[in-house]
Length: 113
Length: 118
Image (cartoon, rainbow over the protein chains, first blue to last red):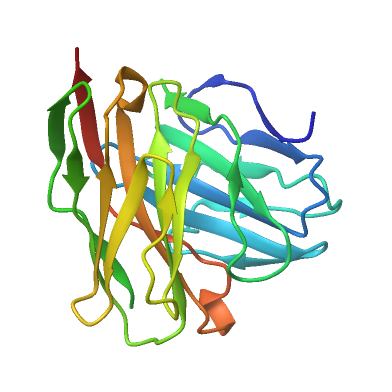
């Protein structure tokens, strides 16, 4: 089955640690996205990538980093510089074309202890 | 900057009845798309319906339809014959063709929690 997978489903981190969230898609999509969801704020764009080896900052990129070495993978690293990292993180992908539907993964819940 | 506003934090409806969720947006662009996404308790985001701004005809998908008022920048979602499985958070979202840093960027509203009661 084609789709987007995110792992792990739940992640716990101690303050001061970096942590990497995985996102993989087998839909042959060119574009991939990372969103953060907080209660009462909807989804906010962290980073996005339209093509391999290229990515752009979204609205809330500070404290996060990404890489796009393969078309299928777009991992997100939450660094110790992110002041309030506890949130639900969603990865999405879409085929080339700005209006094409974005398909979402099941999400990762990150909690900082 | 584009903004999307959903003024109803929570709504409830009886099973089999009709409910309308409101959404307004702000943009200076003329070419854009609007979406309604559903997020059930599983938290999986699911596209419900999509509307192209250049189309005057309102989009429909089975029990879901929209009322798109371009001049008023309004995009409401009507759910007919509500079912228990419609219980979810609903997000209105917007994407434009401005290019540059806006390329491919979805802007979401704050969401409306819909509860369908038996």
